[in-house]
Image (cartoon, rainbow, N blue to C red):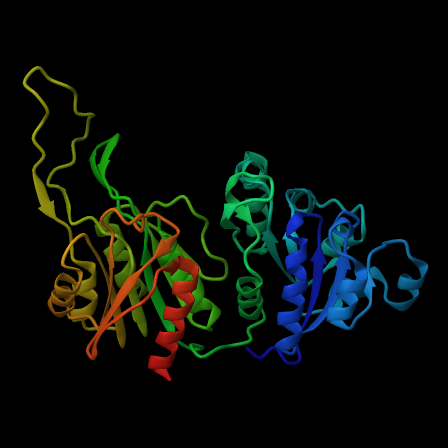
Length: 397
């Protein structure tokens, strides 16, 4: 990654994840990016200005009312001298102040005074992340153009588990590179990624669905965008946030997903990672189906459109079409047959029978191409997405 000639103003607020800012600075400077740091009073409870200065090679700013700082570089100039302002970690407190326009210290004054794009990587307790106030603040900031790098899921320092962990520095670096327009091996390419489940309505309150979480598809979309691709993510109903810096289209049914895909073509890459429902009810009931002494109602099913096959066989066929095959038995045989039947280039097969993969944070795949099948070890879905995106970039190279 080459960020030569770029500069970042990094604001580090107070949270246990502040230590990851040190690695982020190392990665940024290694990529040739200049880094100026602002350390809040609470951030200084976790890391020291000396550490930041040693890694960045630049003066560390902490105090809004330092006369020396004001004579060397006023806070207005400081807020506008960099190409991008990054807040990592961004606590619930600083996000709330950003949303409200509060400027009561150097960091928040810079954020209010800047005319540059702002990228925030939230990190907080899972309950704080899920709180309605935080949700509203994030929506306000996103509407103003702030790029949000969603937190990871996992165990936290407080002992709880859930979303709220600061993303790994490499992920934040990739989001920064994308925001700076630093390019990448997929620059100029358009990728369509489908993700999540589809909901096929039975009546106004019931639907047919599956256990897909959307984690793998969303991670793939973010990984492709980090390599420079223009990404259109078409997502079914999921409980995870939209990846930053790309176009996300929300749908519910298979028919809506197919329509969104066709409207998004042409593309160079299509990855059908969504777990699309194979069937839907032939006739959706306009009223809620009621219990009856005669037993449960009969549901007459009909096939949904085959999105992968339609993309692979259509007039606007992308150069590289990748499908997914979630199987519970005979993984290689079933996935190989699916690749031939769907006319796609690659199939990513995984065994979802009792493995915890469907809806879980990890994946273990079999990559099937024209040249054969290659097993990949079990790993975090984010890591797998980055490796698969690199494999795709190699294909286009």
